[in-house]
Image (cartoon, rainbow, N blue to C red; front, top):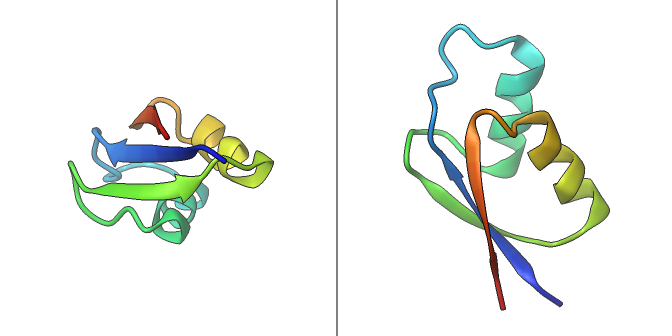
Length: 60
């Protein structure tokens, strides 16, 4: 199963509370921090919600 490397590239300041909570739930706290998550429908949904704030790379 593939994994996703997710990097927070834009600030959460001024973003809606739901976006901040989603980023926090994914483990993204500070700019340019990376997390590796499994490529599941749940993770894809979270990434879609934060698409304008994160960069996503697929890793094997």
